[in-house]
Length: 187
Image (tube, rainbow, N blue to C red):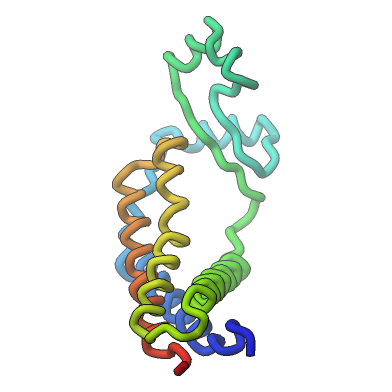
């Protein structure tokens, strides 16, 4: 029997519990609310972005094609005068929370599936539940948390926000560890 077939229950239980924990983090405790700030002239900035007809995508201000252009006098002045910003433009309209939450839930299933499959492959199905759970928890922590660190390094995301993302990842990793240790198939 395949590893995924043996692990369907811990995969689904983990995904559901992480979804619940994530909901609590964002809707009850709201510790990520302070990660975003409001511009004092938001309406003016919105008007300028709107007038640019920017399509959904990622933008850099000031924009330059390569490192050679970045070293030029005009571009250096733009960087020094500021602002330096990374801008993500999304499709107009109220965010579709239903499809976003569905995608998040599918993502939690994918992470739990890969983490469980890796643990099953490494231990050839002969691991004790505790060791397997620890491995799944560590892999899950890395999967949920590692992406935030490059955002701090390259895009200027605040290190406080990165730390909160890593705390989320610890919570999701512990949930994964406990569920897989509890539901690991007997060898």
